[in-house]
Each structure stands twice: as structure tokens, then as C-alpha cells.
Length: 417
Image (cartoon, rainbow, N blue to C red; front, side, top):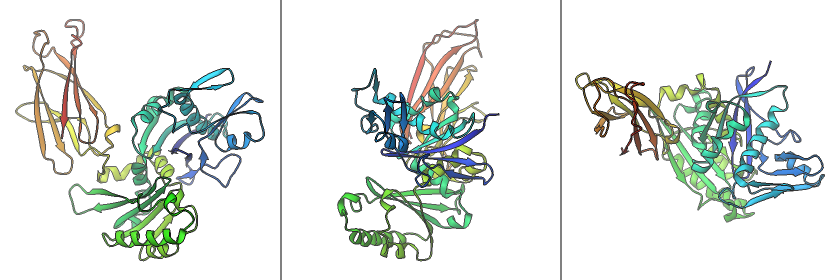
């Protein structure tokens, strides 16, 4: 019997990390490189061996390039917008093809360790939403041979929240701090939990310190970096009472913190790890009890939609019929319903604030459909977002079976809320 895995992937520019859900420990576990058990950060590099006529990825690619004849392909992320082809012996590849191949091989490198292993659910966390990468990764299910619904793409922010809220409750009694020191510099998320509101709310505030703290700015002067980081920590700690702080990113990989570590540890727990996002993505992949905080709290971030969209089903009762539910990232918020017009040529679109229940509505008149008997015009109503606050409602004429064929008319109503 095939063994199926829930997998979390942290996909960054230079490296990838993977974790899988261990059904025995009931926790995500990081996946080490096959040729180096001490390393979990797998470089985003491909190598095609002329000797074995096969592709290597990650640490195996880095090793094979020195022991076999072949061709190295790197900087794949940086070249995604490059239309040039890469020729590998007798075949040409686009960078988009190489990107998908690299991601698939990272996953395969783990699955190959088990007999007949398959992906049950895969959640891929990227630093932030990028339409091109999102669309590319949405095609990954084809090469993995799994259903499209088995793959989700999310952000570091979302997977960071999944990680934080699946730790012990006492670690997020008050606010939580998350410092991310990536190759681009330092960023800080403060996660505030408002339990006295109805609904209860999680608010995420972001501060960009990448101009003040970055690796190229300090070079080898870690003392100055430690001093400056300590000042930022002191400043941020005065804004809210912090129960716990998490540190992640390659900037924290070396042991340079002394003064800043002392500042961090005053009255709070501090955790450092490079695998926060991959494990958070793994929690999301498992779902169930691990998404409980999304049911308990209204999540307020720069990515999330803050309103539901639906229809009033009847002018008198004003019953609300949901199309899309707020509280998720805008790029992962979708919905579609079918409606039958009852003695009207209009539908009323409603936007309902998820924290205040305040509602806005607008009527959309359906033009150009042939006159049909009452209750024989069927429409599909779907929603697509372009940002957390804007998008469009798409209305399509579905006709009514063979009796009243569809006109194929499509109506688009854009909104900003």
C-alpha cells in the first residue's frame, strides 16, 4: 500500500526546505538532504549528468558537478522572466520548465526514500505573492500526477502564522514577534491577539528594517550589527507586551547576537530556526485541528480579504447567500454559485465586513438575455480578486438546459471595497 505524505515546502530564491507530517509524533519534521543529514537547506541548483543521463537537484547536484561530467543550471529564479532557452545536450529548456523540474525533483528526492510514496497534500510557501510563480506552481500537479486540489500556494506570512498558532497556547497569550533576516535584510512581524473583540481578531503589523539591517551593510562587523539590532528590539518591545519571539532567516544563522539576544530574552521566550515557514506550511497541509485558529480568529493582514461577498436571495427576507468568505489571502479566495432569476432581471451583490458586519450592496442589471418564462434563466456568479480590496464579480448566462440554450453572455462587475 502506498504511503501518502502531507508536505510543507519553503521555496526561496537560493534554497528550498521541506518538511513532512509525522503521524506518530503528530508534528512536522524537517527533511534533510540525502547526502548530508545535518543540512535541511537544499540549494536551488540543477545538474544534468552526461555520465548517467539524469538530473540531480539540491545537495546532490552540488556534489555531482564535481564528480561527473555534465551541465550546471543555477539562478533559475532570477531568470524566470528570461525568454532565452537553456540547451542541455540534445534538448532546449525554458527557465519556466527548469523551475518546475527543480521543484518536482526536490519533492521526488524525498518521496524516493519510501516505496510507492505519494503526495497527499502539498503546501508551498513563497516569500510573497508573485503572479508568475503562483501560476507556474499551479501547474505542478500535472508532473506530480496528483489532483490540482492537492497543492496550495501560500506566503511566508501565512505559514508563519500557522507555525506560531500551533505552538503551546502560553506562547501566544500576548503578542508574538517574528524577525525574518533574509538575504534582502531584516523584517519584523508583530502579531497582536485581540480577544476582547467580537469576533476575536489577530492583527499583523509589519516593519521593514532592511535598509537599517542587512548583510551587505555590515560585512564582517557583527558587533555593530548586534548593537543596531539590539536597539530595534528594544524599540519594538516597548510597543507591546511580547510573549514569545521567533527568529528565522540566513542572517541569524551565525552566532553574532550577544547584546541583542539579552534584550530579546528579557521576560519572554525566544526561538530560532530556519524551518519555521516549511513547518508552518506543513501544518496547513494537514489542515483539520491545525487550522483551528482561522476558525477562532478574524485574521487581519496585508494579504487577507476583510469581507465576505454574497447575494441577497430575496428582496423581503434579505437572506445572505455566500459566494466567497473573507479572512484568507486574496489570491486564494475564490467562489462560484448558480442562481435562477425569479421575476427579475437583476441580482444584488453584497459585501459584508467580517469584523463589523457592516454591509454594502449594489444591483447589477442583466442585459441582452432573450425573454424567457419566469425561473428559466440560470446564471453562474463567481468572484476573482486582484488585491485584498479589489476584484470583479463575473456573471455568466447558463441558459436552462436544452429548452432555453445559453447565450454565452458574460458580465463583469468590478469592485473596490
